[in-house]
Length: 235
Image (cartoon, rainbow, N blue to C red):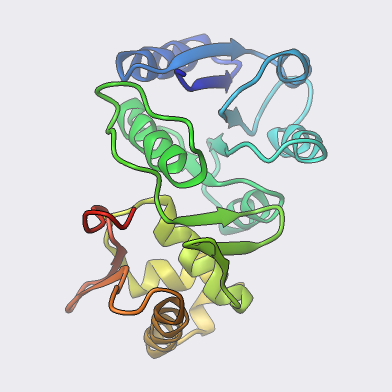
């Protein structure tokens, strides 16, 4: 089954670039230029992901997301020309899985789509689109839960947000500052040592489920990442 992605973008040139990048990666792509059109398509077709512009002509992408979340939990990636922290927080809190600020690289967006689908879906990726097995870590945004090897982890909201950020981009190294921004409402008031403490707690909770495996990689002097390639027989 080829993953089908809905692109909701009213700027034709941007939509065309995204479509080209995703189709080159082997995905099936459908487009919509308004929120209403997107909701009508979602009502009659099955999609594995929605890439959703915040600034649509008839309603905001946030409103579209809220409507989708009433009935479906498919991954949603927001596109926006605004980069304010409040916008990012709102987008993630109402159920967004990722947030991309314009201008952006369509190829990077395609890579993010691959990573998210590996994480949240059992649908196999198309040939040439990164392959790999489904990650043993699933982030459930609807319930605000992280499921690790089938076990729900007991996490604080800060730990959940941090793990969600790491899981959205396996292999990507996040600095402590980036993780503070992803996990705290007031990142400037947080201390970098707080991040180290949260990571230590996350590791402890995950080892209780799968002893001997450390899915969070420390990059000394830089930050942390989630395992991109899991040991054979694990993922």
